[in-house]
Image 1: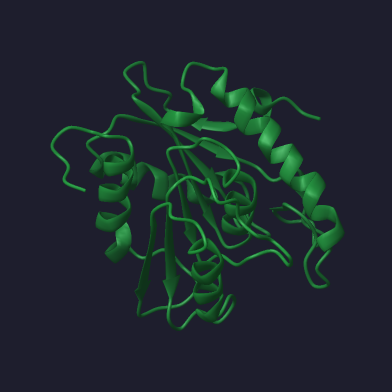
Image 2: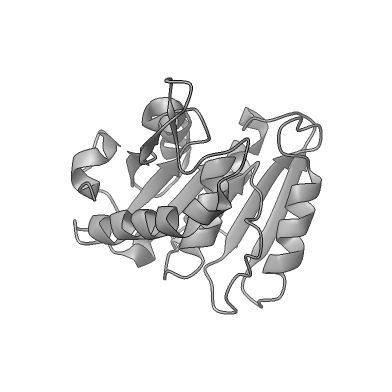
Length: 211
């Protein structure tokens, strides 16, 4: 298994970092796909964030980008190994100065599914799933980090009903759960940045932020 620190694409590590935001890209993208998003969020949060974008372990079958596991057809049998790989990388990052309790994981699409499936069993500060979906037979633990779901009502790739299904499964726990929808498709629009930033600051207990 490759080293997390060797394969992580970091963007401007900060000596004053109070917390870490880990970015998980979608199917067919790459680690740098979410860095501009991460930059924008880091500029708007009160919390000093270190950004870490992790590339998925597998090459995309079309030769461009990467994947956490195969889709179309979905290779669900490969999901457990993909989750163990991601868990190991998150744990390795936690040994690099900032603990899991000071880490927020944000995933998009397939990366969101991976964030929820893997991160729900870790003591993270929180999980943000954008345009995500639930893996088959996945049931989140009763003790889990707080979760923010973001989803476009006109998402043509992952229907908004997937967010409703995630909400249903996650609601079994008493842990915090928020869902924000927007008029739009398979994307993360600027309009949801304030919600994401306030949520990150609240989870991390940054002074001056109301819950």
